[in-house]
Length: 236
Ligand code: XBP
Ligand code: MG
Image (cartoon, rainbow, N blue to C red):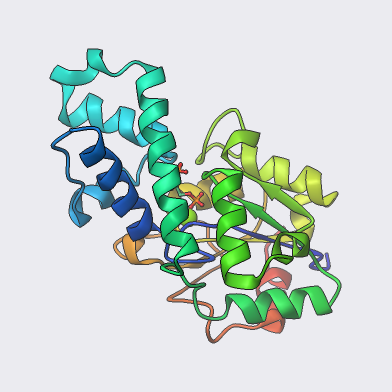
Protein backbone atom coordinates (compact mmCIF):
# COMPACT_ATOMS: atom_id res chain seq x y z
CA UNK A 1 0.00 0.00 0.00
CA UNK A 2 1.36 3.45 -0.90
CA UNK A 3 2.50 5.84 1.81
CA UNK A 4 -0.04 8.68 1.96
CA UNK A 5 0.40 10.20 5.41
CA UNK A 6 3.02 10.97 8.04
CA UNK A 7 2.04 11.30 11.70
CA UNK A 8 4.58 13.00 13.95
CA UNK A 9 4.82 12.74 17.71
CA UNK A 10 5.81 16.12 19.19
CA UNK A 11 7.85 15.91 22.40
CA UNK A 12 11.18 14.27 21.67
CA UNK A 13 10.36 13.81 17.96
CA UNK A 14 9.72 17.21 16.35
CA UNK A 15 11.92 18.82 19.01
CA UNK A 16 13.88 17.96 22.15
CA UNK A 17 11.29 19.59 24.35
CA UNK A 18 11.63 17.61 27.55
CA UNK A 19 14.29 19.76 29.23
CA UNK A 20 12.05 22.79 28.69
CA UNK A 21 9.07 20.82 30.10
CA UNK A 22 11.26 19.78 33.06
CA UNK A 23 12.45 23.37 33.70
CA UNK A 24 8.84 24.58 33.53
CA UNK A 25 7.66 21.91 36.00
CA UNK A 26 10.47 22.86 38.43
CA UNK A 27 9.74 26.59 38.12
CA UNK A 28 6.03 25.97 38.78
CA UNK A 29 6.90 23.87 41.83
CA UNK A 30 9.15 26.66 43.17
CA UNK A 31 6.48 29.31 42.56
CA UNK A 32 4.01 27.19 44.57
CA UNK A 33 6.46 26.95 47.46
CA UNK A 34 7.06 23.23 46.92
CA UNK A 35 10.57 21.95 47.55
CA UNK A 36 10.43 19.56 44.59
CA UNK A 37 13.22 19.42 42.04
CA UNK A 38 12.93 16.96 39.15
CA UNK A 39 16.49 16.19 38.06
CA UNK A 40 17.39 14.36 34.85
CA UNK A 41 17.48 10.77 36.21
CA UNK A 42 14.19 11.25 38.08
CA UNK A 43 12.54 12.88 35.04
CA UNK A 44 13.63 9.97 32.86
CA UNK A 45 11.71 7.69 35.24
CA UNK A 46 8.72 10.03 35.36
CA UNK A 47 8.48 10.08 31.55
CA UNK A 48 7.17 6.53 31.73
CA UNK A 49 3.88 8.26 32.57
CA UNK A 50 2.58 10.39 29.68
CA UNK A 51 0.92 13.73 30.35
CA UNK A 52 1.97 16.45 32.74
CA UNK A 53 -0.97 16.21 35.15
CA UNK A 54 -0.74 12.43 35.19
CA UNK A 55 3.02 12.74 35.79
CA UNK A 56 2.54 15.03 38.82
CA UNK A 57 -0.04 12.59 40.25
CA UNK A 58 2.33 9.67 39.68
CA UNK A 59 5.17 11.60 41.39
CA UNK A 60 2.95 12.21 44.43
CA UNK A 61 1.82 8.57 44.54
CA UNK A 62 5.35 7.22 44.32
CA UNK A 63 7.66 9.79 45.91
CA UNK A 64 5.44 11.98 48.14
CA UNK A 65 2.63 9.71 49.36
CA UNK A 66 2.38 11.68 52.62
CA UNK A 67 1.32 14.75 50.57
CA UNK A 68 -1.05 12.97 48.21
CA UNK A 69 -4.23 14.00 50.06
CA UNK A 70 -3.25 17.69 49.77
CA UNK A 71 -3.32 17.47 45.97
CA UNK A 72 -6.82 16.90 44.62
CA UNK A 73 -7.22 17.03 40.84
CA UNK A 74 -8.04 20.76 40.87
CA UNK A 75 -4.76 21.64 42.60
CA UNK A 76 -2.77 19.47 40.19
CA UNK A 77 -4.60 21.16 37.29
CA UNK A 78 -3.68 24.64 38.64
CA UNK A 79 -0.05 23.65 39.10
CA UNK A 80 0.02 22.18 35.60
CA UNK A 81 -1.59 25.29 34.05
CA UNK A 82 1.21 27.40 35.56
CA UNK A 83 3.75 24.90 34.18
CA UNK A 84 2.20 25.20 30.71
CA UNK A 85 2.41 29.02 30.79
CA UNK A 86 6.08 28.79 31.78
CA UNK A 87 6.79 26.17 29.09
CA UNK A 88 5.18 28.35 26.42
CA UNK A 89 7.38 31.29 27.47
CA UNK A 90 10.48 29.10 27.08
CA UNK A 91 9.30 27.96 23.63
CA UNK A 92 8.47 31.55 22.58
CA UNK A 93 12.00 32.54 23.65
CA UNK A 94 13.46 30.15 21.07
CA UNK A 95 14.80 27.66 23.62
CA UNK A 96 13.47 24.62 21.71
CA UNK A 97 14.61 24.18 18.08
CA UNK A 98 13.33 21.45 15.77
CA UNK A 99 15.39 18.25 15.65
CA UNK A 100 17.66 17.57 12.64
CA UNK A 101 15.90 16.57 9.42
CA UNK A 102 12.38 17.45 10.60
CA UNK A 103 11.89 20.63 8.57
CA UNK A 104 13.28 18.97 5.42
CA UNK A 105 11.02 15.92 5.80
CA UNK A 106 7.93 18.06 6.34
CA UNK A 107 8.80 20.03 3.19
CA UNK A 108 9.41 16.87 1.14
CA UNK A 109 6.19 15.27 2.32
CA UNK A 110 4.10 18.35 1.55
CA UNK A 111 5.72 18.71 -1.88
CA UNK A 112 4.92 15.05 -2.61
CA UNK A 113 1.25 15.54 -1.66
CA UNK A 114 1.32 13.45 1.53
CA UNK A 115 -1.03 14.38 4.34
CA UNK A 116 0.56 15.37 7.66
CA UNK A 117 -0.61 15.05 11.26
CA UNK A 118 0.67 15.27 14.78
CA UNK A 119 -0.33 12.88 17.55
CA UNK A 120 0.82 14.04 20.96
CA UNK A 121 0.16 13.77 24.65
CA UNK A 122 0.82 17.44 25.27
CA UNK A 123 -1.76 20.19 24.81
CA UNK A 124 -2.81 21.81 21.53
CA UNK A 125 -1.52 25.17 22.86
CA UNK A 126 1.95 23.68 23.32
CA UNK A 127 1.92 22.17 19.81
CA UNK A 128 0.83 25.42 18.18
CA UNK A 129 3.38 27.42 20.19
CA UNK A 130 6.19 25.13 19.08
CA UNK A 131 5.15 25.01 15.40
CA UNK A 132 4.71 28.78 15.15
CA UNK A 133 8.06 29.63 16.72
CA UNK A 134 10.06 27.04 14.77
CA UNK A 135 8.31 27.01 11.36
CA UNK A 136 6.43 30.31 11.27
CA UNK A 137 2.94 31.62 11.97
CA UNK A 138 1.37 29.62 9.14
CA UNK A 139 2.98 26.32 10.19
CA UNK A 140 -0.10 24.76 11.85
CA UNK A 141 -1.78 24.85 8.40
CA UNK A 142 0.89 22.45 7.11
CA UNK A 143 -0.83 19.76 9.17
CA UNK A 144 -4.14 18.27 8.10
CA UNK A 145 -4.80 17.02 11.62
CA UNK A 146 -3.49 17.95 15.06
CA UNK A 147 -4.42 15.33 17.66
CA UNK A 148 -3.40 16.56 21.12
CA UNK A 149 -3.79 15.56 24.76
CA UNK A 150 -7.28 17.05 25.10
CA UNK A 151 -8.54 15.05 22.07
CA UNK A 152 -8.07 11.60 23.61
CA UNK A 153 -9.78 10.16 26.66
CA UNK A 154 -6.67 8.13 27.52
CA UNK A 155 -3.06 9.13 26.96
CA UNK A 156 -0.27 7.12 25.29
CA UNK A 157 0.39 4.15 25.36
CA UNK A 158 -3.36 4.06 24.64
CA UNK A 159 -3.80 4.28 20.84
CA UNK A 160 -6.69 6.80 21.10
CA UNK A 161 -4.68 9.86 20.04
CA UNK A 162 -3.38 8.03 16.94
CA UNK A 163 -6.91 6.91 16.05
CA UNK A 164 -7.98 10.54 16.32
CA UNK A 165 -5.14 11.59 13.99
CA UNK A 166 -6.12 8.90 11.45
CA UNK A 167 -9.73 10.10 11.51
CA UNK A 168 -8.54 13.67 10.93
CA UNK A 169 -6.39 12.57 8.01
CA UNK A 170 -9.10 10.38 6.53
CA UNK A 171 -6.54 7.65 5.94
CA UNK A 172 -6.19 4.00 6.95
CA UNK A 173 -3.48 3.06 9.43
CA UNK A 174 -1.60 1.02 6.81
CA UNK A 175 -1.37 4.09 4.52
CA UNK A 176 0.51 6.05 7.19
CA UNK A 177 3.82 6.05 8.98
CA UNK A 178 4.19 7.27 12.57
CA UNK A 179 7.42 8.85 13.80
CA UNK A 180 7.98 8.47 17.54
CA UNK A 181 10.74 8.70 20.14
CA UNK A 182 9.39 6.76 23.11
CA UNK A 183 8.30 3.22 23.87
CA UNK A 184 4.92 4.41 25.10
CA UNK A 185 4.49 6.38 21.87
CA UNK A 186 5.50 3.31 19.84
CA UNK A 187 2.93 1.21 21.69
CA UNK A 188 0.25 3.84 21.02
CA UNK A 189 1.02 4.08 17.30
CA UNK A 190 1.38 0.36 16.66
CA UNK A 191 -1.70 -0.24 18.83
CA UNK A 192 -3.59 1.82 16.25
CA UNK A 193 -2.05 -0.37 13.52
CA UNK A 194 0.37 2.29 12.21
CA UNK A 195 3.87 1.22 11.10
CA UNK A 196 6.35 3.25 13.18
CA UNK A 197 9.88 4.58 12.83
CA UNK A 198 11.80 5.64 15.94
CA UNK A 199 14.03 8.68 16.23
CA UNK A 200 15.73 8.28 19.59
CA UNK A 201 15.59 11.32 21.88
CA UNK A 202 17.73 12.52 24.77
CA UNK A 203 15.50 10.99 27.44
CA UNK A 204 14.96 7.64 25.70
CA UNK A 205 18.50 6.46 24.99
CA UNK A 206 18.37 3.31 27.10
CA UNK A 207 15.16 2.01 25.58
CA UNK A 208 14.58 -0.84 23.16
CA UNK A 209 11.72 -0.57 20.69
CA UNK A 210 9.94 -3.86 20.00
CA UNK A 211 7.91 -3.70 16.81
CA UNK A 212 9.52 -0.57 15.32
CA UNK A 213 10.30 -0.61 11.58
CA UNK A 214 13.62 1.15 12.20
CA UNK A 215 15.45 2.95 15.00
CA UNK A 216 17.58 6.00 14.14
CA UNK A 217 19.49 8.47 16.33
CA UNK A 218 17.77 11.28 14.45
CA UNK A 219 16.25 11.94 11.03
CA UNK A 220 19.18 13.93 9.63
CA UNK A 221 20.12 11.12 7.26
CA UNK A 222 16.62 10.05 6.33
CA UNK A 223 14.51 11.52 3.56
CA UNK A 224 11.05 10.75 2.24
CA UNK A 225 12.30 7.99 -0.11
CA UNK A 226 13.88 6.22 2.86
CA UNK A 227 10.58 6.40 4.74
CA UNK A 228 8.71 5.09 1.68
CA UNK A 229 11.13 2.15 1.47
CA UNK A 230 10.67 1.34 5.17
CA UNK A 231 6.90 1.59 4.82
CA UNK A 232 6.95 -0.60 1.72
CA UNK A 233 8.83 -3.26 3.64
CA UNK A 234 6.16 -3.43 6.32
CA UNK A 235 4.94 -6.99 6.76
CA UNK A 236 1.14 -7.05 6.44
C1 XBP B 1 5.32 13.66 25.90
C2 XBP B 1 4.67 13.85 27.19
C3 XBP B 1 4.16 15.15 27.60
C4 XBP B 1 5.20 16.18 27.99
C5 XBP B 1 4.61 17.24 28.88
O1 XBP B 1 4.34 13.86 24.88
O2 XBP B 1 4.51 12.89 27.91
O3 XBP B 1 3.37 14.91 28.74
O4 XBP B 1 6.25 15.57 28.71
O5 XBP B 1 3.51 17.83 28.31
P1 XBP B 1 4.54 13.33 23.34
P2 XBP B 1 2.24 18.27 29.20
O6 XBP B 1 5.85 12.62 23.23
O7 XBP B 1 3.35 12.43 23.15
O8 XBP B 1 4.47 14.56 22.45
O9 XBP B 1 2.76 18.76 30.54
O10 XBP B 1 1.60 19.39 28.41
O11 XBP B 1 1.38 17.05 29.33
MG1 MG C 1 7.55 11.78 22.40
